[in-house]
Structure formats: C-alpha cells, structure tokens
Image (cartoon, rainbow, N blue to C red; front, side, top):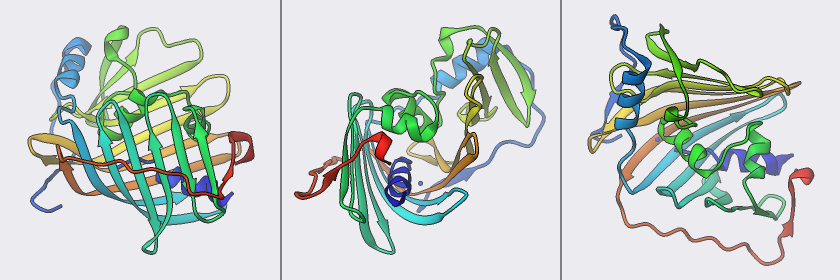
Length: 260
C-alpha cells in the first residue's frame, strides 16, 4: 500500500511566495449575471503561460495513514507534467505524465508503472484525461463549459454553474470566483458507483498577471474509502526553460493497477 500513497502524493500535481499577492474569495455581495457571461469570463481567465515550475507542500490522508511530502513540479502546458517527491529531504518517487502515458517509479519498494491514464483515474475514482487533469491543477474547469447549457445561481459567495441536463452517469458542479473567475470549487459525482471527486481552491496568488492557485484540497470519496490531498504551492515561476528527466532505474519491478 505504501507505493499507492507515494504515487498519489506525487501526482498532485500538482502544485504552490516571495512577492506574490494572495487573494481570497470575495465576501461582498455578488451581482447575478447569466451563465453565458460567467462562462465567457472563466474562459477569458485561462492560464496563458507556457511552463510552470513550483514546489508543493503536500499532505496525504486516508483512513489508515497520513504523510507529508514535498513535491517539485514542472509543467509544459498541454505536453508534460513532471513531479519529484521527497520525504524528510530524501527522494522517494518520480512521475511523468503526458497526454498518452503515465510513468512513475518509487524507491521504497523499488517498483515502477509505465502505462496509460487509467492509473490516475483509479486513484481519483473518475475518468479524466491529461487536459482535464491539468485543468484541475491550475483552477480551470475539468470539462469544457461550452459543451452544454448551464443554470447559474449564487452560492457560497460564488457563481454556481450546473448543467441544465446532467449526464446520465455523472453530475458536475462548478463554483466560480466572482472576482477573477477562476474556480473556487468543482465537484464530480458518479451516480452509479457512489463516487465523488471534490476539488476546492481555498486561495489564489497573483503572479506575472496570472491568478494561480495557492491552496488546493482534493477529496476522493469512494465506498468505504476517502482520500484527501492538501497542497500548498510555493516558489511558483512561469515560462522558465525546463527539463523533464525521467529514467526508470535498473532492477525495479513493474507493477500494474491491480497490484497497487
């Protein structure tokens, strides 16, 4: 089970001060506007940089165990997400994710995985692709909001969007910040499997004219099991020239989803 925990901690991707302005959700009254205007503003607030480099202070919790890890994150937008996780200053795992593959290795049991996105979906309890997973990390909607019609209401000092016709298998909800139109929260519910994925963006920081998450909490609820990952982004930099070194060490044993 240890390798599952280290992989999940390495996956959050995920992401979070020097000279960085921190913002919170506005507490003032919100003027009601149409869902089309909210969606238009959210898309306009899309992440415009080409690369991300950051350190992430991460805490993993489930019913049996909890860990604190430090993750080095490097992202080339739409191409690769790379992470190196350490525990008490010692490297323990490395992850490389592309639109077509997921690779990782962990040093505790000397195992590795080289496959597709089904591994991450197994952990999150939801079917996500690379683009959706990337959006999760940067405060954008998992799904394209232009692909449907939405109801708009005001809830928890946010614009709450939900499809007028929810999908047969899933329900999706978005809470959008009325100040900068990034997400305060997004939630995906599986109607048939009793699974729920909730991503909350507690704070944002403004860096190089970009509103970027500072504190994220990912909660994956499944029958008889709840997993929680808390992330704090530190030392975030954009548009740096980055390398993504990844080589599975000799002698490591291959694993698969069923073996985690």
